[in-house]
Length: 224
Image 1 (cartoon, rainbow, N blue to C red):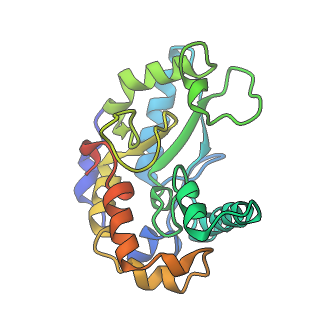
Image 2 (image 1 turned 120 degrees about the horizontal axis):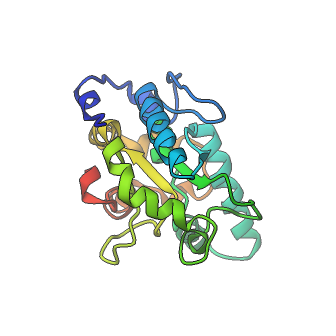
């Protein structure tokens, strides 16, 4: 079933694009905007018929939660004696600057297969390939997710810039594409400067422009 009919129906509050405000969220054990929730339910039901139980381990994430993650990583790297610049470079291999995360939109899911036994950190690339516990999930998603509107932002394409390959992260394209377009019109430098982030002195207008080009736009072109 195609959910792309939702794409033209949404008026977006700018605060919601940066993880603030009070978005309408739905889900049991996860939080997504209603249309993404509906699409996920349909996709999950189809997967379960094939013996795969899709479990969302991360979905909507507020600005404050992303800020906690960022500052924790920054503090840990600083304790290792690295510079502010090096700390930021390490963080943005996988984590986003607060206010720039796609998870703020309620359209993103990080998933695993709930049937295999979970041990340790589940969101590791090798667990989604070869003999990994989530390889069957990855193969099913690659064959079926698109028909429900879900696409992989951070593909294994070596020509893609920005964040590393994330086989667990899917985006509900009918909404996230429109959100990205509006997000790109926001004044990020002003917001970041007053947010209390570790290393914020380096996150100036020029840095954020380069970060936008390399990381925020470093996704599967179908999501642009």
